[in-house]
Length: 186
Image (cartoon, rainbow, N blue to C red):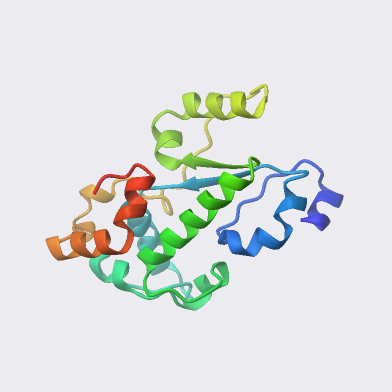
């Protein structure tokens, strides 16, 4: 962060790291940066992330033929660089990531949670809300293009993403409370 700030004082960066990576330096970072944690319905995350991982030529994470197998798969490969400890499955990994940032946002006002769904369905309304909250004058209304190859938005309509009752029970047992706290029905 110090190196980037010295070279490029106004910048935006994206990270998939858990909050624990930033915790030792968060107070310093927030003196010159605002952090947005964009969270998304985990069923859609699992769907999109599984397709993304399966398309890669290297072991970024588990490669699974179905959503049911993926939600039960342990994090592995290069994806481990974004988490501080091993977790039992990718669903628990989603929960640890989002809950870590949400807890940090309660203590650090420079950390803001943003729902992906709000950006996706009401982009201008959500961007106006963020701009007003930050005291920004929003100059552009141009919505960035979504890379259709990596961000899948029709998870519920894909036959490979169908969850059986046993899968729904597994999702509830692993992340049901967190989904409820973040406004995702299951």
